[in-house]
Image (cartoon, rainbow, N blue to C red):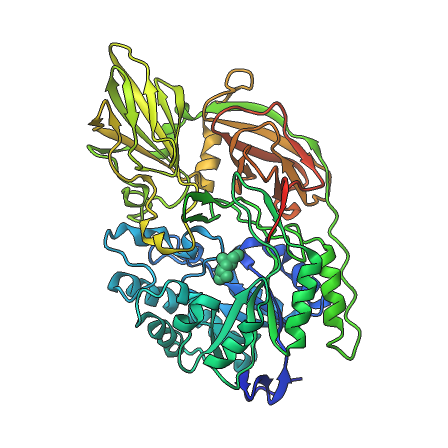
Length: 597
Ligand code: GLA
């Protein structure tokens, strides 16, 4: 048993825990990306790989979905997660943000912050600072008892995340640090930056750590030059990479990974594998990047990590295990057995329902002369709409050129009298609407494809229609706006209406429902969306995430723990055209691959 007197120290070029040298062999795994029933399994696999530390972010947007309304239950039960880590015998480095980047919508910041048109995220701007304080008032007291010196697993806490790459406010990092310390964080504090960010992201009295994928000899000497006599810690050693829609599935060469990890360890440094187990961006949580162009991240966060999205071993796992095992006098625990996968065959699609027939389920539409972005809609107790789709409806006379002038975020399908006339996005900003004398209904179904999680555009992430759209150069007016966040209450309300036979509705924005029949003990499986165009899948009301035929991802991970023995309800929201079948398969397909270079 450890006596708990002195937490992690970073002195004389090394980490000490209770005065004993500790080499951190860490791995990232995010509780919010893995079903809670599997937390222990993944952690045991981590432990058996020779890791001694687990690293997790904390997603503010999930914990405070509406201002002042907090959720730390179920899959968000961070205390249970910390307890399991302690039981499995892993130390924890907590990364509470408030900004976490992580390919997560708005870097984990709640979208309701953007209701304030002057919002300056990641600064000491009053509106952001006050919201952060209130969030920390609710989060930090929950994790305080889990600190090392209080008998828990947390040995270090990270201040913000890669602030050096943003660095908009020189008072901000001190503000976050003080907000943590004032609430009782006593363990070692650290910052985490890439090479270019370290000089402005690091701070006095806080250990600077570094993030990279390829080692450059200069990195270590550079780190030592800004903080001499401190241990070197690679806080994010990227074991793979993430994917975006329309791109390839990234893989990172296992031998290259092994050689860099060995180099890091030979240099005496500590390491955290980002990711050790990536998991899934369930729901509408995937983030996006927008540098030259806007690119939305896919649903899977497999990351080509040592454990796959579904928690299975890869060759990276076993090679790392070999390396890490040398750091222990005793042999490592045996690697736990795999969770079997099931192939349940075809999902029997039974019925369908046009989106146009269920708009009343969203309540009265909001009437507005001008378009209003989703965050500023008067829904969700004054918090606006965060995710999903928003429908803007108006009446037009005749036809002509329809122009968005860049005001569609991020993508929309346009309909005239329920007939699709095409899609608009960042690139395609015009459509021709056939000239027909008379009044017709124009519908613009806008999808929020994910807010950027990195870069300077984070304040500019309002979604829906963010300004005027035009017909024949005249701005359209008098909208009826339907908020379609497709949350679980909405999905279950679909059962209150009458559905059509499958044959009747196949195209357009349509919901499909079917049954997935499972035996007595449900296993993990993957839904193959081959043949379907674009949409979202819900299983027993849970949002599995988006699919899109531009790839790369073709299957969606469906955790067995979310299935019931017997019949399970599958609901699909398809934007364009249904596939001819839907299959449950036992092997994932994340698409054509490309090596990260
Ligand atoms: C940075 C961030 C992480 C993640 C990785 C890329 O290092 O700190 O949150 O976004 O990039 O996967």
